[in-house]
Image 1 (tube, rainbow, N blue to C red):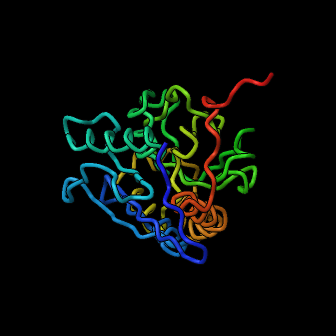
Image 2: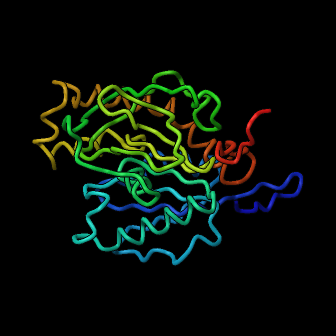
Length: 262
């Protein structure tokens, strides 16, 4: 467990977050705005253009975004090994971490889970995920509504969670929608960082996958309303993640470290 340097009374801590962006098509978007307005400093790296740090010294947290490649596509993208290494390092050190879509899949693989092509086909377009029981007492998820608006756009899924992972949100088609490791390490299979324009770019780039969505869901007015709903739900979530990174919000108790009741 990492040690936090607590600020003096009245002092405002500014956590520095490493943001790994695996694909130019999926920038940090509004999520970055929410993290910054909550007081975080972002160090955004787009590999392989940007070199990844050798370790996580000096960072208060790690965010890994989505991308069009698979979590195990090392032959085409050899730098994915370094991303998984950093995610494994963060999980082992209990460094506040958030993996989004591909980022969640990379986190799962890095910590012993299994990611495969979804047997029921892709999840595409606006969607809803629902909280599991544990989410009601989780530092980040507790204040979310029972059902949350998200964006889905993926063909691979987290088939098996890592050992010790605790599920926080689910959906009928694929159950492993959000999970937690080591008290403060989170993965979400869906997107919360998009804008209507980003989604429309994905639709144009992957028309065969986009065609599997419900008719009309990619109309601009519907996407605009969807993203307003996403912001209402997930903007406070991002603020709580920053509080987790600066030490002002206590991480969840790791169930593996809980003593049995007498």
